[in-house]
Length: 125
Image (tube, rainbow, N blue to C red; front, side, top):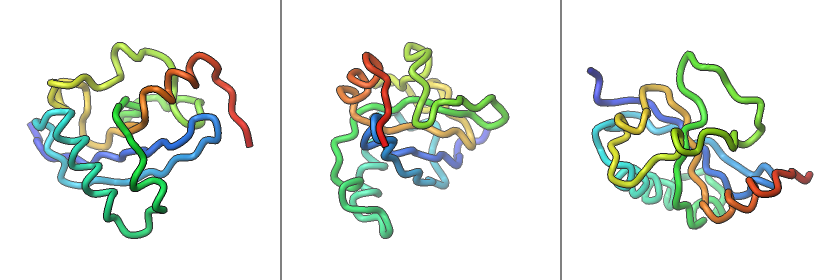
């Protein structure tokens, strides 16, 4: 089984304003924990060239699977609000046990913002 994967992380700053940036990570170890991967992503984006400063310093704290290779894509513009129990990555899980595989796309966001958006899923332009 392959332990390294390409994972796209969608940095979500605002659900309401659809403010997000996808960042691709190569050579992701699927056997690392969710917390370790979040730390790697935070460290990488804090210095990544071409990423606007607000995305680098945002307090991301939660990851959720948006799309897996060869699966159906959601029609939601930022992220689906369905199946949180299955798709939100839990602390202590490895990426593999959480369902992350090669070419998976995950959203990285602030749980509090997501809760507010889920309670009132509007978007503004």
